[in-house]
Image: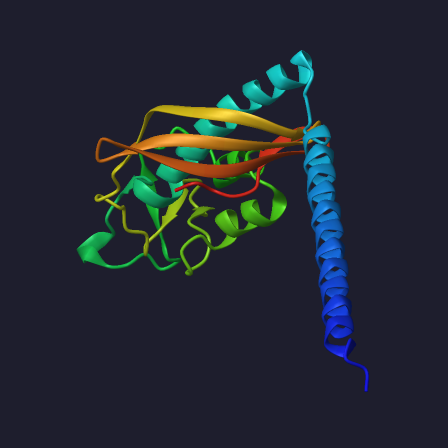
Length: 208
């Protein structure tokens, strides 16, 4: 009978535990090194724009943010006043004669949209911003027409009088914009993406 068997078993168990601990330590070290490598790679991938590109982005952002607000007013909050039809009837073509417009045609308005947003967003705004078709059209009488279904949003409370933004370049053709506007005297941040397509900087979506 082997009286040393328990001792041998204990020795083997201790050895196995030691091996497992060693393996776990190696795995943790390898994992920590991988995390460190990934962090360094991410840090090295941060894009640094040249002064020329950064100035171009900032100029584009200033203009596009201004255009964004113009489009908000034209399509969502104010629009234009209109002439009423005789006896309070709705216009036969569905569009009132707009009053007070400084735009010569509907296409002049839509060109602002096309010069501000990527194609998919511009198409949505121009063709069906509210679910009842285009907001503006050129009437047969030569007047600018505004859709009879449009209702101004008198409760709109976003203050665009002094927007602030930070441009974060991603590449020479992409830039993240962190915009801060005031809503009821409180700063509200929003994020947009600005992209350079066919030589023009455009926003990816409308900020309302």
